[in-house]
Image 1: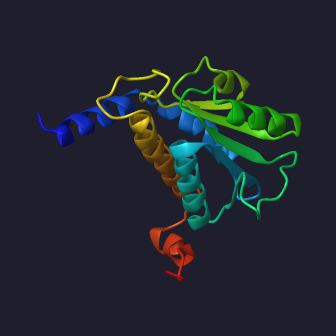
Image 2: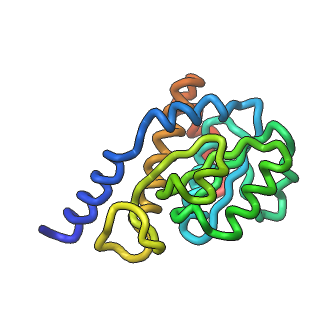
Length: 180
């Protein structure tokens, strides 16, 4: 079996374990009338940023925690926090602070029993391998399998949102950057 086939099999295995009902539970929390903040560290942070970008394309108002133009979180906002282990100190501390401010917390993690998993109002479990050793074992380095499958899982959530909101690919394309 080639490396490409092995990686594809790992991705298929993890995605087969993602509970789509968890996506359906999160979808009602994300509406165009609410601001959506994303949070993550390292590559998980990049996956959170990719999610924010796609939300913008389909008509939402997303912000990335830590960017200079990100406003303060307020009661009624939604925070999507991504952490493979669910115990990354910086992510958990900021997620807890957001909850203290009345923010609805969505946790994306491989470990439902983690601090983030227990703290979140809704959790999406993406059981790909992480550097902490959680999730489906992988031949890939560190948390690569988690990050790959989080990206796909959050893209599926965006697809669900776009279908719910009747946002076409053409409408999304109009929001895509024209400064490239």
